Structure formats: C-alpha cells, structure tokens
Amino acid sequence: MPKSHLTPARLIMAIFFLQAVALTNWFPRIPDMQHQLGLGPGELSICLIGSSIGGFIVTFFTGSLIHRFSPRRAMFLAMIAYYVAQALPGWAWNVPSLFAALFLTGATFVTVDVASNVEAARIQENLGRRIISTCHGFWSAGAMLGALIGGAFAGYLVDTRYHLLVVGLVGLPIGLLLVRALPAAPAADEPSVETPPVFVAPSVGMLGLCVFAFGAIIGELTARNWAAVFLRETIGTSAAAAGWGLGVFSAAMAIGRFAGDPLADALGPAALGRICAALAVAGLVALVTADGLPLALAGFTALGLGVSVGYPLSVSAAAARGDRPAALNVASLSLIAYTGSLVGPPLVGYVAEGAGLRVGLAAILPLLVLGGLFAGELKRPDRRAAPDPGNSERRSTDGQRDPG
Image (spheres, rainbow, N blue to C red):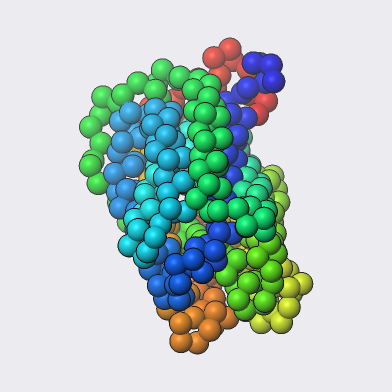
C-alpha cells in the first residue's frame, strides 16, 4: 500500500484488527484445554478468571504510564509482551499454570487495548469525526477471523501449543511495524511534564458511564469465554462447529461497530445505547432457551449486535469529558468495565456447576439490564478543562483531513 494511504486512522484500525486475531485464536481451544487437563466448569472458571485478574490489576497503572510515556510508546512495548503471552496457555499442565498463563495474557492485552483506545481517541479528536466504533469494528472482524482460524486448528487436531506459538510468531513483527508507522505527534509522543497519579480510578461523575460499559463488557466476555463450551457441551456440536458461536457473535459485533459511528451521529449515542442494550437482552434470552444450533447462533448474533457499540461509545464519552487527560479517563473506564470479566465468566461457571450452563448464562441477564439503564450517560458533555496535551495536536501535519 502506498505510504500516502497509511493514514493514522487506517493504521490504528489495523492495530485493533491484529490484536483481536491473536486473542481469539485461543477461545476455540478452551474446550481442548479443558479436556486435556480434565477440568470441570468450576475449575475452568478459576483458570479463565486469571486473565481478568491480570487485566484488572494492570489497569490501575496503565493510564498513568500511557499519559506519561505516550500511547504509541506504551503500545510498542506492550505488544511485544502481548504476543509472547498469547503463546503460553497451550503449554499449561495444571490449573495453577493455566491460571498464570492467562493472568499474563490479560495483563498484556489490557495494556495494548487501553493504549490503542487512547490513540484512537486522539486521532478521532484531530479528525473531528467519529472513528472509535469503526476501530472496534475492525477489532471484531479480527476476532471473527481469529475464532475461525482457531476453530480450524481445533478441527484438524493441531496441538494447542504449536498453534498458539505460530500465532505469536506471525503476528508480532506485523504489529510492531504498524505501531512504528503511527506518526510521532510532538505533543503526544513526548513524555508529559505533568506527573500523573500512580493509581487511576474513575471520578464520581464517570460512575454511570462505567456501569453502562460494565454491562456491555460482561456480555461480550461471557460470550467469548463460554460460546465454544456452550455449543459443544449443551447444544452438542462438533469441535469444529464449536467455533461458530464465537464466529457469528464476532461478525455481529463487527457489523454493529462498523455501523456505530454513523448511527451514533444519526440517533445520538444515548438512544443508540438503549436500543443495543435491549437487543443484547433479547439475544441472551434466545440463547439460553435454544434447543438447537440455529437458534443458538441467532442468539449469539443478537447478543453480538447488542453489545457491539457499548464500549466504543463509552470510550468516546470518557475521552471527551475534558476533566482529566484522556488516558486517565479511558484507563479508569477500563478499570471498572473490566471488572465485568471478574464477575461474568466465573459467575457463569459457578452457577453452571450446580444448575447447568443455560442457567449460568442467564445469571448475567440482570447485569445487562442494569447497564442499559445508564445509557443516558453517553451524551457528550461539555469540556470543563483544558484538553489533554495528547489531543491538542493539529488535525494533521499538512492541514488536510485524514481520509481514514
């Protein structure tokens, strides 16, 4: 692609796409690792929560580091650790080792994720038009591709260790090249003269926004972690077909997110948030009552559309608040939102241990409803302070709008 076509918007969209491909190659292999290690639903949920705990802990520090050293630099270093960590779960030999591997996966993913969102918010501010939902659309497209690749590896009975190792070896050099190609904006890529707080937590004014994001995240992470297990054990599909649930869920999320930016402009972010929350609830009800693969896939589709724009809309609203630097607000949003990963997957697992996976999935329904009640927090507030230095760059170096 000619250099003139490598705009900042396209580069950050490619980064979102690539990190998702790596992450979701793992999810269709969860049933294989469960079988290999002889884990029940409760033991598996303990392992899966390792990723959530790792991400949750690191999020306390990520915002300060990104604000101080710039999203681009933080993303470059974190991506190296991220791709190394992606290869580790396949080498686990028991519950503690799988927990530890997923802990590192979650910690490195969240760092790359927050840095990518802050950089996307900066680029969006410079362009003067929405791109974050589209960035997340590319993330979901990458998640769909990763799920299908992972399902194919599972169907061909490729050893999980070598499958995930190949993913890391292929993805790492591409990811580093994309990050290095991002423009080094003087205001954003120089260390901040302001000393940020070591720990980042949301302000009181952001709590409602965090609750909305929490509902979307919990629906997304539950589908990611349990889709393959639900189709394989409850619906009774083959190992290869177990990846279809995550595939259609990710495809629906991609469609919703690619449509999210124009829909938010047309309907308003709050109205769009309410519509999507209702759709997510309907999808989950269809899923837990499904008696076969077609209805289950329809449920995953509706759930994917429903949770698709929740987090991107929340990121845009958090970055635009103006009461603190965007990196701190986005990281604090992630801190609360990612607690969904500490609640959703293990809640499903523990309920499923005694009542079955259908009831386990239904246990998150009240949380989806609660999140939808706070969709009004998505209305863009007026800026109340000087903009973040990372958002003060001129719209482009030559005065032209980035075609993105």
